[in-house]
Image 1 (cartoon, rainbow, N blue to C red):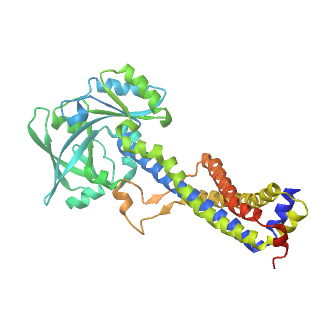
Image 2 (image 1 turned 135 degrees about the vertical axis):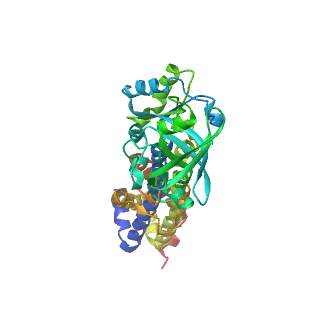
Length: 404
């Protein structure tokens, strides 16, 4: 009976009720959309880091991490790569030579990190081959080809097929140099990576370094990235002399950002719901003050105060429960559409790319968001009704009935 009375009461003033329902729906949409937007940005950044720089797991000589010394190589690297390719959990593995040096054009020079890769293997662990916007990701068996980022090419004033010079320290400690021709120019999501990293063939770099078949890094991409910790644990036991790290260990800042995202988003939606709560309190308080005679008459004919209190709370909860499905539906439709087409922020600013984020954001709405957000909204509705309900209980029946 109390439910029926509360339901009829909220529709006695349709405009006011619809405004509250719309406020709840818009507030819920705003909170969930912000969560989906930032979750999409973080997921894209993690995917970009894994695909271009980190992979799921990396092998190194423990001494290599400190100063990236040319002689800190992985013993039997090729044998390890071949063994990893046969692992049922591994999708691809690639060995790399890595050194730092200078890249010089006729007009200027810049510091870079040089990656010597096996092109076919690297295609399976890195997205760089797909990011090439000019030229190709190495061609045939031509010697001394290089693939560089668009930002670096612009900085050096170089174009496709131009020659550049790489200068670095060889295995013997002597300063050495090699001339390379630009085979391709790529553009990844991370402009700082594009400006600091170049790729050559493994054999070409090894010949100049004097390392022959030695390698500095082995990158591993798994079939299921969620198994990174478990697979890495097994590989650490199998290769105790090597440093085996997952992407979360290689980039703890990204792992931390990912882990605290949910907490940050709940704080944001909590602030939005707090603002929404004041709107509901204002609306319910107005409704209570307008219905003083009604409450006075109900209490005069025998409705006790707990039932009056519960009726007002039910009205607030019903209004909110009407707004929650509308907000969730609107969010699902909006995020579903934007997840396919993305949100292009490049027209407003290029700042995101400077920090490794894509200018196109594809929101991600996790199903696990719905239940806690809906419960938080329902709790907001209950809390919003408490003060107006207490205000109604303070009315004296005799005085309230005579209110005009």
